[in-house]
Image 1 (cartoon, rainbow, N blue to C red):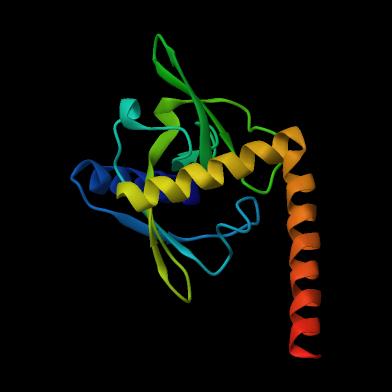
Image 2: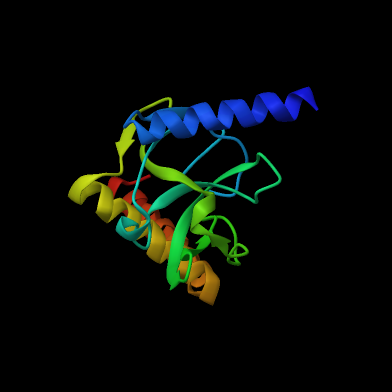
Length: 170
């Protein structure tokens, strides 16, 4: 019981910090966003108005009201309803969409990813291009095109390697 009380207190402090304009950072765990996020990355979360969210944005949300489980997935669709929005999300590594959530479970938008090798900023034009690209790749996985596409890229890279070896005499 004490754990739940402490978890709720920590959640309230984090929400208050976001409301005041502070960015939060936390480590990532799990493989649902692979290869975009790995277990060695840190994500930076900022407050975001629900109506400013766009397809392809990476968001952090609670799975439901009872659990303190946080999920960072890509926003695939936003549907207006009487209480705000219903958000449809998906992990990049998953083939199916997540169960839709109400926007009141939204914690914030992920604005930066820090990997062991680099920092990736998801704000501005470059960040939007990254998000839209990953959104499109995530969509293609749903309709099966992704597997075909990645197989073709693998074949093409093998052919390029073979041609390069022939040219270089190897």
